Image (cartoon, rainbow, N blue to C red; front, top):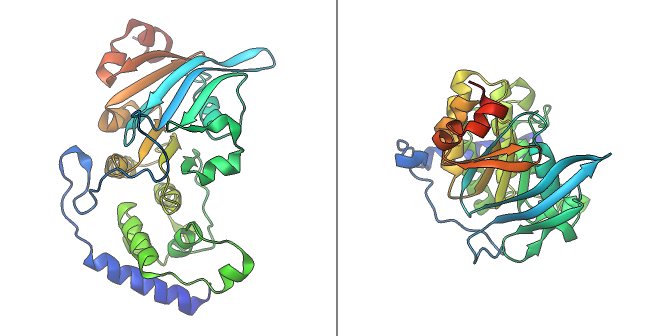
Length: 291
């Protein structure tokens, strides 16, 4: 992308941002001006589940990392996953995204898409976005350029050479810049951002691909208290528009964003319910929270 085109795009994004409603955060954490109905594209959610795992198991060298795991997530739900190290949280995400194939079980995206029939890249293209703990952004490019690269467009050489944002794409980019708290950093190099800002930028890059489901692995690790609070606000804004699975150890953060919490232990669901319910569960106290 040439500097002139980048500057033109940045100016357009800033102008669009100036016209967006700012508003205060409404009840439930959704920012005013961004409330819209849940849309899940071609994913059939007729049975009220965007993700469904049943009796999933996988072993590595005789160790059962996932053991008859069953859970489901509703469209627009924000589900928090907690548990001790080695509980199977990362392996579960690996299975959902096609990185690891289970030995047994069922994994469905919506009501009709059997994820075990597809490869990792195909699953990503279906609308499942994954964010790892360490942010991965293009540090030598600007915030604007990172988001532009993440657009769901033809990535061929010829198409890339002549690519220009249309008005709808510009609107989408402007909206995401505001959502991820980087509206004032549109022309900054990603490498100059703070750790938390890089995390938000990577989430923004996922959002540019219009995912139906976001898998977020320890998203606030290493963040300042202020960044953690703004990340909670961000997730509550995304809830309802996207389905989110958040794996995290920060219980204060979980308390801020959670409605339903799933506790994993030894590859299975140990407990499920509100944070208060699982915190008072004797089994959870014994294996994870302590007294």
